[in-house]
Image (cartoon, rainbow, N blue to C red; front, side, top):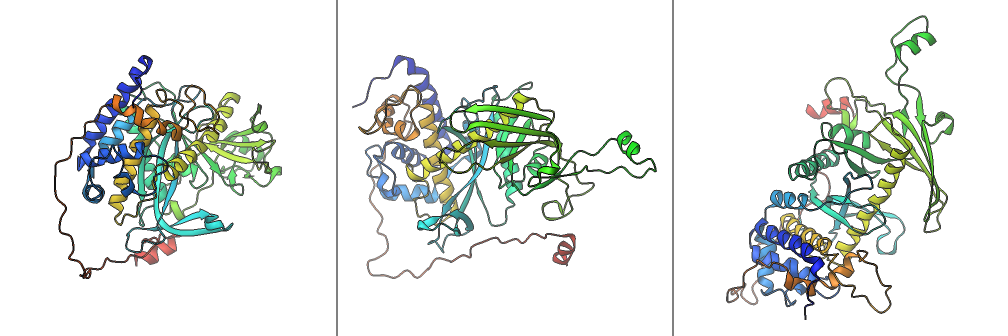
Length: 484
């Protein structure tokens, strides 16, 4: 039975109903089946093991043939759906700014040789092994809006599959630029607001991402490897000629700043100490106008003109302890903003720690919503399934204030607004009758004849290689040789 809605939750149901109606309009082909498949994702009991099991859920009124046909031949208006997601209420940081996290998650397909455009995905400790492995699969780049405070919630705004010929940094820059543009067009950012903070992990080169995102009202914050070497700001002309009275051309870069060499650090421009419950005393030191010394190699080999000077603030964070009992290693962060105050430094490293909330979302959509469970052959079908999972997760976020705590006997009670996505999903079946359901009833039909029994498949599927299809040169000499 469905529970009567709380009068205070009327706005929550109205917002969720509007999103469901907009979602249905974005499903331009096989929309009824795709919409009911998303509802079945949310109403199924327990984790999703296979999409065909969803056809047995009461909310799914069509057969398994319609489900396979919708995933293989359906259509989703992705640009419109991106704008719908950007128009929803956005979580904000403590200072009122938007914080977006970017990260890659893998859909491993090691046993799918007939699926094209697979890449080698770097995973840790799979199948009980402690060593790293490279497993074939599809790689997806996600962009999500983060909340403040400890939580397992975030608002997924975009998902893009990376192809074999894609440059990750360039594709991610286009993706982030599109998300920021949608946020501006949908009225979630206005002129005069604080810059949107984009948080990257160590897999991205933060200075290069800041260069690729130039012109947008954004600030790039990324983790740096502990073996990096950067440069201090160059001395002014007066300082240089005072130290070198015989003259000469002033240098473009200052002295080296080696992350592994404390003797090269010097005195920090800003230093703060924050006492936390999980990490003890967190000490942050920041140096202003630290930049990398770029060379015409690898990612910058095709850059025309003088290489840019990408200055920012370098932050070193050292904690007393970690929650798991491991030895805390220093964390190096680089921000494209210069001239930070103590409050700015604390806000940056705290925002970076919130980036790990996206990992909870990845685990939830994989283990509970079954994002990587389907054995779909074509990448297009995988993208349709991915957007259905994103839409389902978005509905859980919109309804978390109206959901009841249907906890197991061994689970601790959760306070108001503190339910996890998995616990909100348990009560979605009770909330669904109070939401808009634009999907139409199915028409009676008969199954097709299929292939005659005993006949053989005379059109075997094509097998595809795994890996990159484009080799990028690492030097000008190598580039000239490839151009022939």
